[in-house]
Each structure stands twice: as structure tokens, then as C-alpha cells.
Length: 262
Image 1 (cartoon, rainbow, N blue to C red):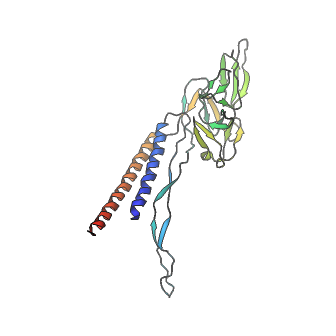
Image 2: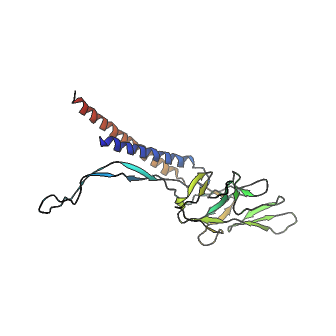
Image 3: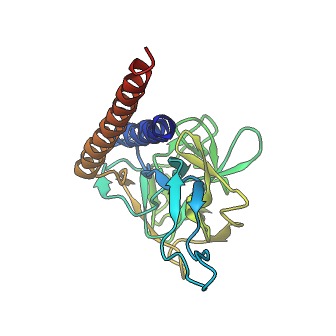
């Protein structure tokens, strides 16, 4: 009976939907996290009678066909790359992006990764790095005797050293943007990689045309809305239950048919 397999595809699709929602909820407090959503498409149809077929020698046309669907499938889990709320942390090396752009990060294997999470630290050499120790690209080194660090809206990093009355520039934070941000590949640790779908990165300084500005002492929060996620979770649960009910109904119909053969 087709209904068993059709309902099974619905159950599997909603199970994946719940997994996506659960990941969103789990990352509600993850800096710079971008929520995902599951997108669905119907499967192939078996056409028993095609609309537009001739139904007589006089040329009459079948106005409505008879098509039986095979269920549903998940075709993608795109990321919603909207701006998250900005929270003040008062930490010197916390930097939020207001607008478009991602920080450039060098991974240990030499690749360039991208992130919206600006929770930076200093390593033993004074370089600005991510919490995992990955170096910000381009490399910015803070002198060991620096008494203060400031990062302005356009990404210029300045330090004040003993004996100086004015701060000096030590580096420039750059941003990258993509034509299709949803096409980036998430690899964990708040990092994304370029793909053929994302397009090549366009690099520029914060505040330039098309790029956002920076805000020191702040972090961008996840763009997860708890109310929306719970509503979507309830809807997914109900859809799963209804598909399970179809499986039960199909099983009862098969049982009735089998009992007639006794």
C-alpha cells in the first residue's frame, strides 16, 4: 500500500526538521550563530491518467488528471544570515559587526575561514586569535607593553604604550562578504568555508561601501527567536503524529484485507 511508504517519507522529513530546530535552540547563546530551516519538496508522482489526454474520437480532452504522489523530501537546510542582536560585554577584544561582512580567520591547515563571532583573545605572541587559537587574517600583533587597545568602527587597531601620549596603529581588521552567504559551509567552531555556491569572497575594510562597521566591547548574539523555534517544533511534532496516524490507518486497512482471506 502506497500510503505506508508515503507517510514514512513524511515522518523522516519531520524527524530531520526537529533535528534542525533542536540545533537552533541548542545554539541560542552561541555568538554569531545563524539559524537554519528545513525546506521541503514533494517527490515524484505516478500519473494514472494525464490531464490533457484525448478521451474520445471527437477530440474531447481530459480536464483533470489522476496523479498519486510519493511523499516528501528535505532538499536543503539553508542558513538565515540576518543580523543578530548586539550585546555589550565591556571586553576589549570583543568585536561585533553591524551590517554585512565576516571576519577572516586562518585555520591551522592553511585555509581561510570566515566567522561572525568576534570574541577574540591574544596568544603568547600577542597576536589576535579566536578562542581556539586560530589567527585573525591579516595578522595583528599587540605589543607586550601595550597599556590599552582600541578598535574603531572602520577596523583600525590602535594601542597606547608607556611614554606615548597618542595611540599608534598596529593593524587593520578586514571583512569579507559573499554573493550567497547561505552557500557557505559550516565546519563548527563558529567558522564557515567558501564553496562553489557561495561565490568568491570580496574583501574590504569595515565601513567601506557594502561592508558593515565594527563595535568594540560588544558581541553579536545568535539570530534564534525562541518563540519561533518552539512554534516550529510544535508544528513539526503534529505533522509527525499525523503521518504516524496514516501509517496506523494503512496498517488497519491491510489487516482488514488480510482477515477477509481467512
